[in-house]
Amino acid sequence: MMRLAAVKPLVPVFISLTITAACLFASARRLDWWNAWVLLGLSLVAGLAFTVGRSPELTAERHNIKAGKIWDKVIVSITVLFGPAAMWITAGLDDRFHWSSRVFFLAAQIGVVVALLSTALIAWAMRSNRFFSSVVRIQKDRGHRVVAGGPYRFIRHPGYAGMSAFMLATPLILGSCWAFAPAAVTVAINALRTALEDRTLHDELEGYTKYAGRVRYKLLPGIW
Image (cartoon, rainbow, N blue to C red; front, side, top):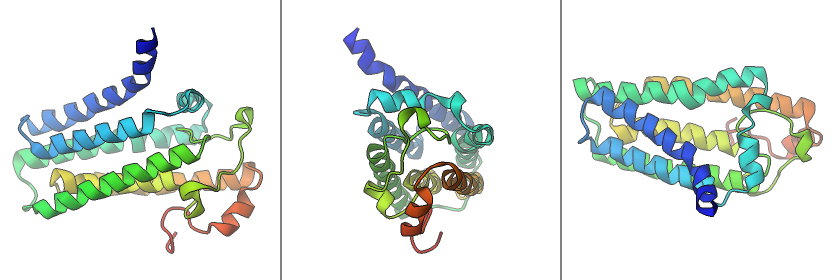
């Protein structure tokens, strides 16, 4: 029973990896695609970084999807599922039909570095914020308050910043110029989600407006 309890939180990680692999290899129609295997390895590292050592309380909160804002549920389906799937499938088709010009190995290396840094940023934000929900909601039942430590000292939404950076790094890792199209659309929708969540926090979370006066930028220091 103890072993089962330890493995259970990892089930969503392996489901996500299975979906990613299916999109990549089915569209490329080959398994000997090293770029895809590198992305899967990075995704596994990210999944473990976000899950291992996470408090049971936060795990339960992140599974509480029904409690989120209605508009956010629509956006989440795009940024977490449909957007990434479109990017993986586009990259697979690109590899299969050779649509892109040659993408240099250095670009893939840069993508790997950005993906690792993005993973570290998201994991840092998750460890710093016990209210790091998977949906937008004010967690009054959990004593929701403003978090100003960790990466929240520098930007107000480090989780979204990391997610956007990982998304833009993925076409580089996969060597696909065409995959930047769905990646860019997904990042734009993620920015919209950031703005809507920020407004919700201003309106509904006590102390957030004062915090936003100190930490001026939502995603990119010095820009926005």
